[in-house]
Image (tube, rainbow, N blue to C red):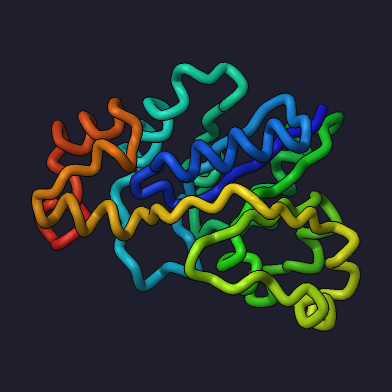
Length: 204
């Protein structure tokens, strides 16, 4: 089957993440979307992130009513920095009969040449690239020059475009502003219950 793989820190997961997953699944005919919260994202090593247990639980709550959305703790359970190529390799072993599609935004796609073993990554999966408001459309020709063969492994989506960011949500929580229009209700309740994003101006 076609399996979408959606990675990210999900700190917190929000409505734009869910809309992207729904749109990609619908447009490309995926059987499931697998959400994989990052363990130790090496490109964000200097940025503090919330405890894995909180990020996992927020994703679980956000997707609980969608049977075609699944949660995997694969990266969080693996020691050391989280490299997408290692995650996809492990999924290839676990899901040998499935066709894997890794979902990422324009901003992360532009950084792909910096990713660990990006050339090997594209041999194991297709990339589904979705718009990210505030970022330019990817220059596929330039990226192809740095990662030969990339253009044959990319599906460029032209929607959805939803201007929500986890950073904006963390700032709003720190300022005592409402986020119930930005995150699913169970996630909003969880953030309040555990006092996330309060103590340090955004990250707890």
